[in-house]
Image 1: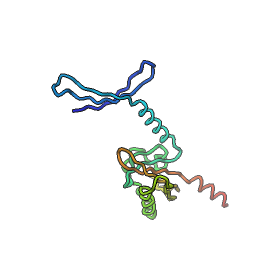
Image 2: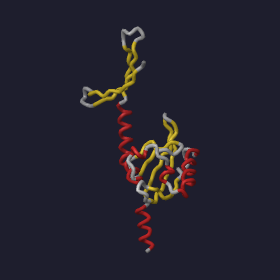
Image 3: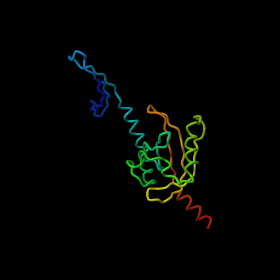
Image 4: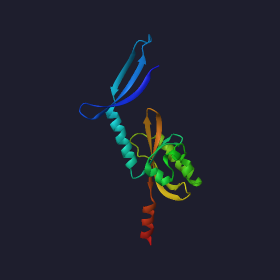
Length: 171
């Protein structure tokens, strides 16, 4: 019957602090035992990470080992043409032309077996957007381990402008 919750309170210095609580009733029912810890720095760090991911100039997808999206940033939503709610649960293969799926998925899987100092694998391919248009991209894959398990971080670089500039130079 332990209850877990977080609270925010105003500190006497005028700033805000966050606490994480664990509370459980006394088996005799006369008291509630509780323990709290200050999680302000963790909250601030999480917020900074959210801001960095949101402001990134490239698309970012966090995926399961099987390639299912669990998290996306706003730039990934622009590239794919899908809001985060529709991206979540989609498979990476859904955004790849049939001929490129096997190679890109193998590249993604290869990042799961790299040593920490190995360069992350990448793949240049076409990305199929929600409206059916194809965008040239470079996908870079990195393994991410967390308390929730192992994930794949995918950085999506839109190469459209670069390819356009290359065509203009050749002409």
